Image 1 (cartoon, rainbow, N blue to C red):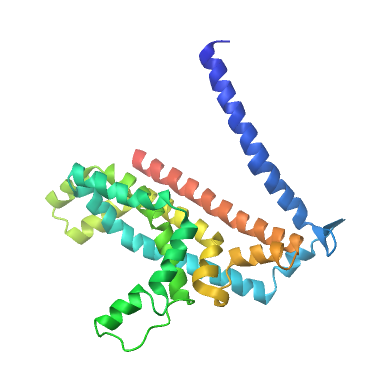
Image 2 (spheres, rainbow, N blue to C red):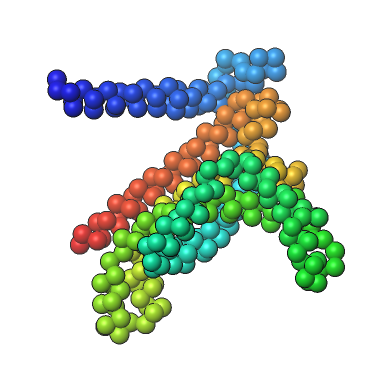
Length: 284
């Protein structure tokens, strides 16, 4: 066995061991727990039951799930609308300025997102910076109730997840063949036609990748609705957290986690097939 082959097998073995120990086994335990009965004394009773999955079809949980999807979808759409023109601008500026802009995008990752969420409280609270600026400019006479609202939750989600949309879009737009755009203009296409028929389809993999990177975490980020939405915002992440830590109904929380994981897996599978189909069309 050569040294290169030994190193490759060792690296693959370590990664496989890590994924098995910290990803596969915990997920299997969650799946097993979802099919057990609740025990108030010991959290779970080793008796097979599908009651937790039947309870998921209750109207209360359905509303929470629907509200979570609505918030995640709106946050993803806002991130896309903000990120797409910025990513195009990022590709068109001179390289020296581009490096600084990329650093500004990456800087938020240097700080805990929990700390940055608490910083938004200072910005959005009744006597915070935003209300002070609006009152100082004479636009409002009394502070707006921004904190502990759905709008505050949207602000927190967009602020936290915006870089996850910008970076895939930038990577995809940067690889765009400008000759195709120039050919469209030479053939008499307008700016709108060029965008919707050339640029948008060619950057669709970046749009889908960025949307998944924003949408999936937006479903499970429970601390943002807790801090910025208060008791008014109950999303799927908060619901699962409460089942494990407050209600102590581990099977029910595990069942909700399994459903959420299945939804995320389905979306990743859809992304894989859409990307495969897109590459097949390019090869035609």
